Amino acid sequence: MGDPSERSDSWLGPLLRWIGQQPGPVYLELSCREHPDPARGRRGPTVVRASECLAALPASAYLELVAAGVAGVTVRLDGCESPAEVDGRIAEANRLLAACGRTDRVVTVGADPGTSRRAVHDPHALPVGRRSLLLLRGASVAGPVAERAGSERERMLGALRRLTTGLAPASAEARSTGRAADLADLEAPSAVLSVVGCSGCGVCVRACPTDALRLHKSRGSADLAVEHLSLRQMPAACVDCGECLRLCPEQAITTRGRHSWAELLAGMPQFLVARDARACTRCGGALVAVDDDDSLCQVCAYRWRHPFESMIPAAARVSLAASAGSVAVPAHDAVGRLATAAADAPGVLGVSVSDRVGTV
Image (cartoon, rainbow, N blue to C red; front, side):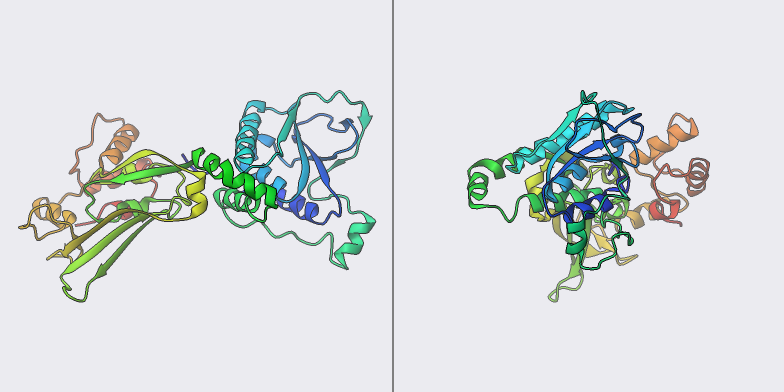
């Protein structure tokens, strides 16, 4: 699964800054860009019309609003083209709010029975009261707003940290009597990986789009011929996309469920592989030998046996076969055929051919 909604909620930045400038509590009512008439409804909340469909708004956005101090968030689903998607994101946000020990909830409504005519605000042109102007102390209200930094995952973790720190004593007591367990029970989109039979080739590290895998190699001072390999996963960066499983030439990686949000907030790495390896006599790379007589790493051994061919991971062979319309692609297919197939279907492997297959 990829990381959804990247940069889709950029209009939320000006809204969050505006909330931080308000002297009193803020009650928001959000409506879709497609809504025909959000001006009609109950008086009271500040009505903001999103710059796009609210289905593009990730669950982290609602947590950011609550963490910024919004006293209440209401989302109008009438007029939205994808209400089920919006409902799903809001349900996820409310589960996380409950796990954080918060009583705040994001509320959804259909057609608002109110008949009052209200001002509808653009998130880039929100009203500024006289008191807020005085509090700004000469700052430019209409000045440029810095884009919110980080990925959707980083924004989610940032909001969760704000929601679970700086608590009043009663809330701290509530956390110690059950809130941490709630967070530990909620699964995050981050795969728990298990590795058996790793050759230390580093393909999984290069394949990971979020840099969630790290391969560290070091040589000890006692024996320079022995190299120590350490493969680590950063659960907070993993988005469970499956690229490491798909492209591992040894098929050494499997999943065992998902990490919890509590584990992601802890930010601790998971050690997947820790072992010693000798140096390959041909290329000098790491050699995780199965047999004590082995002197070549996996890549060099294959090239020695097949000097005019290159290996293709099993999952990549399936993708190439599907794109080429063929029945199967041999594991030792020629480099030229792989390059031709990749050129005919760019992006099948997710990267250029040279990143996955070494030339002879």
